[in-house]
Image (cartoon, rainbow, N blue to C red):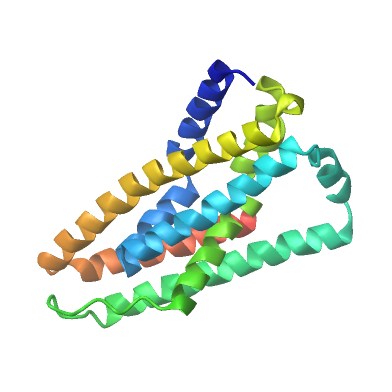
Length: 213
């Protein structure tokens, strides 16, 4: 792959990552609910799933995945990922809803970040691209149609992954950064309670979307 081709790939990834979708919405909602650490970790889960689909496409496993899609075992794993991701998002939604029911005082200190909470956030992020049609169609259908993936070498693959990580860093910095500033502003104005209610609704809606798409 030439430098021009890699530049075109970077542009395609930029569009994919910045196009509004349930992943970006959930990342912002997670930041509003639990802070920037959870927002970045949720985005890290999303990029992990995206890299998985890129790897499937480049290694030629997409045909095998399509053949295995009809198998009950594959469908079972697919639904386990859906149910797991939706369950975690609903759990987050319930926590945000509780924040609306029992609002913390404006000067309350943010809860410390726990490994267990970050792991749950990461798992929910991974489940998003693994079960979301948008990245699946992009990596398994659109990408092979415009790029000769058979010409990808190990070095080129690492460059493509590096491009994806750079685009993730840019996307997450913008979305999480703005959401974190909004969170501080809402807290200072004493209206974060209502933001918690909106956050709960958004995460519950994303969970339902995850199950129904």
